Image (cartoon, rainbow, N blue to C red):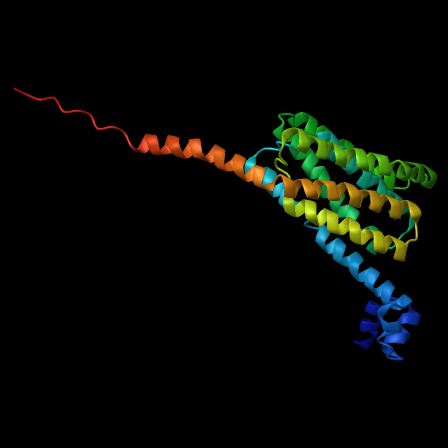
Length: 267
């Protein structure tokens, strides 16, 4: 049991930090600012983000399914976001970075691809939705199956920042033009913001890759813009729903309450 426990802990920290905590019992580790503490915190945050990413876009997916509509969701923005996530995932995987530093992108890519397919499907393009799914699967295999050289992935990762900003800010512009966030899920928006902020720290700690740090910094800025829009348009969306519900309620009441027919008097 002790061996299994040690193996698990060595997955979270190196041998030196294990000895510091469990042999020397130096639990404070420099008043919580030592290298071992930062490494352990980064691992914990990384796995926490991965666990959260499993469901981060599920509220968005269920909202589209419940309404049978993708109104207000910018397909161009979703596709750019998906491309940026996929490139980042492939770049990290091929570089051999720890799974705790990028594993969330695998789940985000899957869920974003589902959202893109649903936008096409509910937009009336069933055949295009099927072709998109097949094409995206082929792209992932090409990028992560050893068919794409690392230097090409590095170049693509360099374009990730403008692509990511363009995609996210396109959605922000759509929200501004509509005066509403439409079918965007507030839970998803705030979880994405929290995850991207935490990823800045984990990228610094676990990879030191400047490109990844810049990418997550840009993602945090774009996610913040959309999260602020969700808050700003919150009351506006509620008022629109209540206005739409009022005529329906009035119509239902009128249908139930029919005027009584006048009886004819007989001589």
